[in-house]
View 1 (cartoon, rainbow, N blue to C red):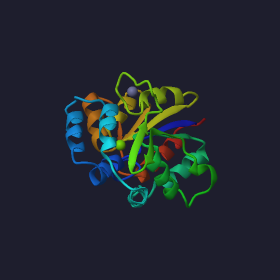
View 2: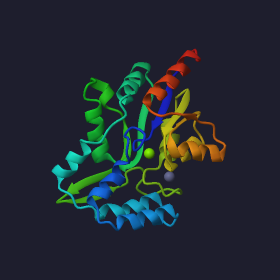
View 3: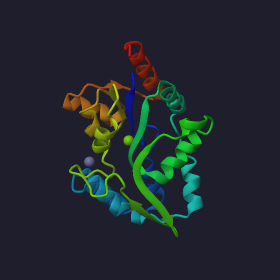
View 4: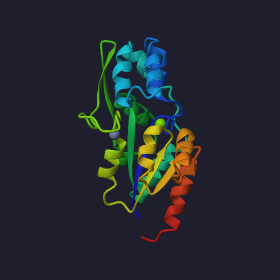
Length: 224
Ligand SMILES: [Mg+2]
Ligand SMILES: [Zn+2]
């Protein structure tokens, strides 16, 4: 059994939303008004980042220190190991930024060796230049009908090819777009409620210990 696993980053692998926390610490307070416009449905996920991220001013050392303090689910490394052992294709899909996602994953997985450290990450791009950030949207630059920062549904369609089953792990509204088409949804926080409201079956998770238990049980109930 080969699974294609699609895992969210913020509030799923980490215990906080890294982008929001960085905005809180390092951006002009007007980022909150933009956030309110997004919550009110006036802006898309991509538009909100295009407006908010230029409000950040930070030195690299200061940003890196903060990134290095972000806590990761203590069972995530074990789950990554399990996926490598079972040849499941694990992908991280995120509306967050590659700069800190790579740095956080490197730290979280530093105790493990080789291929385990090379999980494919599909996220927004960020470069720091003289205290200001420059962002890009490599997936997909032309945009999409949903207004995603990173179009998770388009990546899902491309990357699930060849897998026996697709598994989505997430907590937020951008994961809901995937949940509709996934074979199995492992949901935290808001995603649980969204799925409930839309009648999408999901399993509740609190951390990656729950994820491991559920994914291991799939193997026991499946013979190929
Ligand atoms: Mg999230
Ligand atoms: Zn999209």
